[in-house]
Image (cartoon, rainbow, N blue to C red; front, side):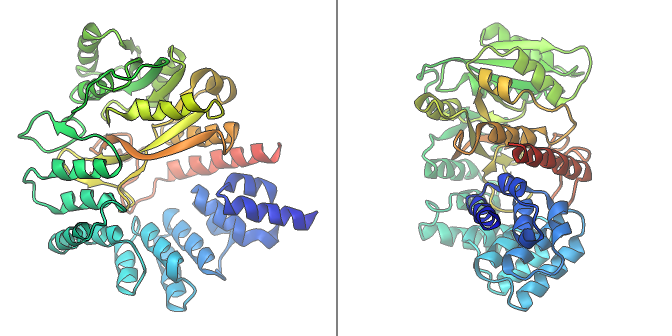
Length: 445
């Protein structure tokens, strides 16, 4: 029986079902595997508590990065350097460690690259840019694209854009990036301004795809200068049958006036105004409670949806009734046309606000978002996966949104976000707490 459980544990690890694996095993004999599972789940404190002297490259990767990610940066860097020097950390695991530690120590990541870590062209270029070596990055990005690597590594186009002077070529490179993902090109609203999430427009006809109603929930607080473009990106979707439910969280600027003007022009926009500020997830839950669609997704009030976003995320759900939700990627961009990821590379990452799910089933079986200050997006995605199983969801790899990277947003605010090289202890504590709850729920099955 014990041998069977160990085989099952290893199978779950090999298929990336880490919470299930942890629920299955509490054995000290599987500490290394459990540390790896905790690391992959983002439970960095739990991972670093299990292993202190790594015996393999995978253990060194999990422990070193987990230490850095939980605020023990020097200890994590020292462990990774030691593991590389003694040959424990090499090959693909060294490449993975280089990419992961870049968010906490650019110097260490660059050191590993110089020592021969077999990393992608994109990571090399991203590190050059992060170190301020723009000319070298520009030459390397151009050479990689000239070799035809952009089709395999579309982020190269965004890195090239970051390395270029602000001369109007950013949009062309962004469209090359979209094209590499099979997506239609976009345009600038104001040609005199850089590309940003507030300066983009669709270049394809709106409303050409019909289907069941999709509700897009949008919590809003003091985003009057940005929310109009965000809503317009939804109204310009190729998927016609949507409603946008905006919940204003007691804004003190002109957010409400902007939304009311849009609602007057298009009945697909609905506005709910809260009397007092309750936080983004309370606002999102209010929008979710008022949703009418068969499907529901979310968009932050400063982000921009590619015109194909809703159609692409709905299509798998219409085709397969065994699927309950889809996810998609995004790239974040600031108001100067610079693409950004806290983790340095890749720039294309999972959009935490992207779940598009069957409303009745999700509310009945998973419920609403947790009402916390930060991190409830990730918890809800994990809860949906827990409830509907690994066969019940699909992640689309296309970047179907451009997120606004700006000061004061939920992702950059000192109290709720995480800066590059930094650690948000509140977010980390919450992540560990909800992960433990989910693992316990698996264990009771």
